[in-house]
Image 1 (cartoon, rainbow, N blue to C red):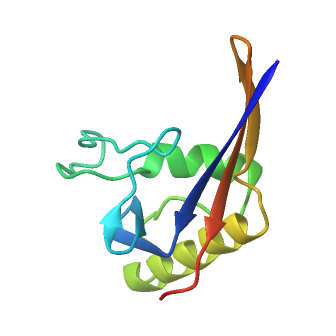
Image 2 (spheres, rainbow, N blue to C red; image 1 turned 180 degrees about the horizontal axis):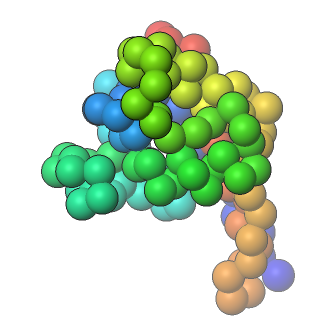
Length: 117
């Protein structure tokens, strides 16, 4: 079996509006498998490229309670800042790393937090 390691470096997380999260490297949106961009989110009325919307945040919340969709309570900027901190910590702790097999290749996917340069 072949093995392939994919490392995706991230140095910034941004929130476009409530329940929209995007990952960046050197001020560019990351669009590399498996961290592919969505073109829009009809559910959350967002028509720009992004990675996660509220539905994705709900799925993450099922495994990590520190990440959750904004529910209208509290200040949105506080929610966004806390969500970005939580996601950064999950990346730093390796919680988004995955290993999977496709065909005869075993892929090891690692998201790595890189301090601003």
